[in-house]
Image (tube, rainbow, N blue to C red; front, side, top):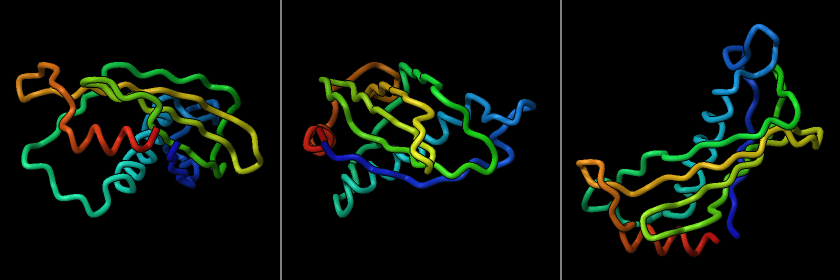
Length: 132
């Protein structure tokens, strides 16, 4: 399994009045690590002749321990499943002191311009499958 680990720090803007990250910050952390994973998986690949649309259709996160400003943490992203039209990404967020803070999962689906599900383009499917 190929994974990407992105080192980050909680920004003040990510926290709520309790001093803990707002739950939406976790989704941004996931996306930063996911984009870095995709760049690593497809570095040097020719651009797709058509835009690839991968909207999120399922998002979940379990908050296991708090993250506070200015905690430093690692967000790990990995491909956990590849279907005909879908890809599932898994995420783990761990503070640098070793405490697991967030575990998440996002499912994306390949869609055409009208929003209908379509098969993943072969080059994308192959690259994602190699990451499993």
